[in-house]
Length: 239
Image 1 (cartoon, helix red, strand yellow):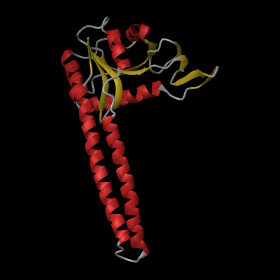
Image 2 (cartoon, rainbow, N blue to C red):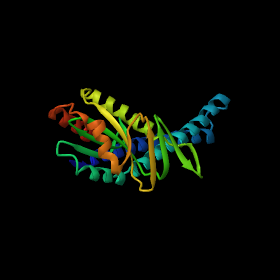
Image 3 (cartoon, rainbow, N blue to C red):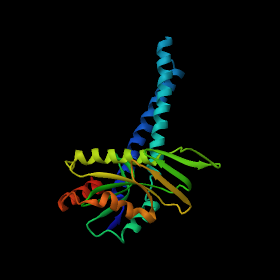
Image 4 (cartoon, helix red, strand yellow):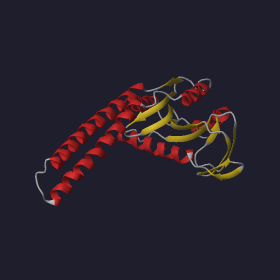
């Protein structure tokens, strides 16, 4: 099994954010400059016209702020995912070269996915977290222990995984790969974790039980032919 990261996707997404951010900053700066100049050297005494120029300054400021945020996003995109790498390394001892594990997947029409495994059974989307403590999954909901009490969790890895699954299905469908089944799994990597599940909507596990859980669901059957596997890998890696 290959454990790889599609670095080209990250680079392309970074360039996209940088381009959009630069255009937004430039457009916002021009709007602010024109608005301020028009207010300092009033071209009209009408309140409506002056209000328009004031709104131009405000709009330009907001536009520039959004552009700066996009540039910061471009410069801080995660280059790799150490947790996903560790999960991939754990799987290499079980899966043969028919499988490709792609971590740190970042695509404009998909968003960010911790990792995607593609092989004869289809695609498997990973939501990988390093949460510690007591975590209990009841179907699609999560409870964790905070300050000695069980409370509804502030985050929901099941829903996050499901959203990634739906996004990848749509992405593959647009590339005429709707026949590729897309599954999901939530993996906890922390050592200090007490994990339990009752009728999980999405399978949940620790790294130590990952392959065992995969054998119950994802690995049950080989559903797609080798050419389709290759096409799905290429779509996720380069598409």
